[in-house]
Amino acid sequence: MNILQLFLFIALSILVVQSAKASDDAEDWENVFEDVEEETRNSSRDGRFYWLFEGMKKDLVEKSCMGSNNQKGTCVSSFSCKIKNGASLQSNDCRNGVCCQVPAKCGKTNDEGSCLIKQSGATITQNTGSGTNRVYKFPKVKGACQVKLEIDSFELEGEGAVDGECPTESMTVLGSSTVQSLEICGSNTGQHMYLEYGSASHIALSMRLKEGSLSTYSIRSYYIKCKSPKRVPAHCLKYYTGISGKDRSFNNNKGQLNNQNYKVCVERVEGMNSITWNECRDEPGSFSVTGRSGDTEECTMSTTDWVSFLGDDRRHCGQSLTAAPITVSSRPFIMNVHFDGAEISTPNHIFWQTPEPCKWWKDPAYDSDPLRIAVGTGDTIIRCDTDESVPIINFDMLVDLPSLPAGLKAMLLNLDTGNTGFCLEYAQRQ
Image (cartoon, rainbow, N blue to C red; front, top):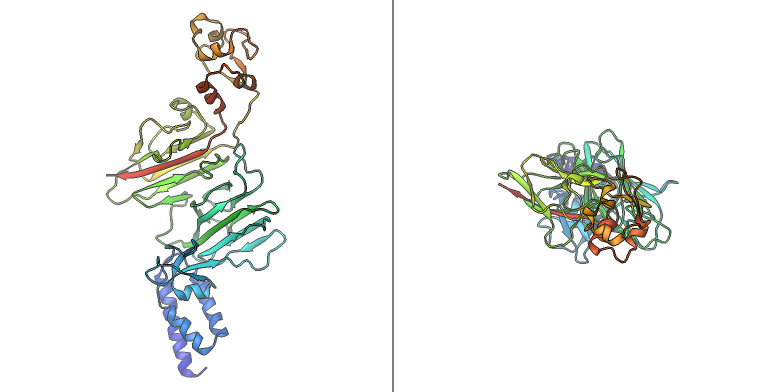
């Protein structure tokens, strides 16, 4: 390398570094510059200068794009795509740069099937027919405080949850201060997560797949720097920025999952002073959470499954959110999601909550009670030891009664099972 070539290389390298510093985004530019030096050493002279000049374009980080074969990527400069060994997809979505899909570099895995994800914008995928357990680790790189996951596709084999559990396949988030441990399974295409590092040295995704699995997933990951405007509050697992939008619980419409405890946040649009939440109006039955519909007191006292909104003192559960939309003006705009560790499917006995315990079973004043009519007096399905005792009802025998009204049976069967989660839409208002 002669003196002129050396001078040009140093000058252009400085420009690349300065451009990177000016772009306070999700890119791990320290690693990028190391890659530039490596590529420069291994490339020809002509190739070297071509790559450096291409790198003068500013990356358009985190703008999603769609390739011609429905493959998803990210709009970046052609320079960034090349040094990350990404594939340039045919797309018209990027005004500058290219639509790039960067496969995760796992290299050799250890005995636990772990691999490190170092590139911002990397995509981890699982193809059909190669199901094994694996762990994807995101080490905390210099200057980074969060990892964002965009789940482009996520379809684990089977319907997903059985009684709220993930019996054969799942993905568990570990190490983030945003959620202590979160396990999801089933159908989660289109979901996203923001994961704060806190004091952790890495965040991990533990994939549990059965042998010969036909499941597929494709998840894009981004590092977010601590000073980046793209960083969201540390307590927000999901974060929305539009004036209106939708949020779905994980595995929505397939099965409500257990042990879900997280916050959904909406960024306030300037000039908007409140937010209104409602069931997704284009999807009938879009709210299905443990509890009796319309029983506000029961939901408020619930310790099992519920959603709540900052500024609204109630907890909401059952088979409908409320009769009217929920509007709150408290800021920030936050929805709390809490699903406990068990969906009770077929209890041996249930307890019938009434103001006058067993008296209703013997008092003629309650002759019109639908449960008494369906069961009949003297039946062994219900046992009352004294007038003051709580009635003990054999659940299995009760739900098999042909005389049990359909509405009552549906309510009993929905005590804590068969829930599908929720789809809720929001709209900010002045």
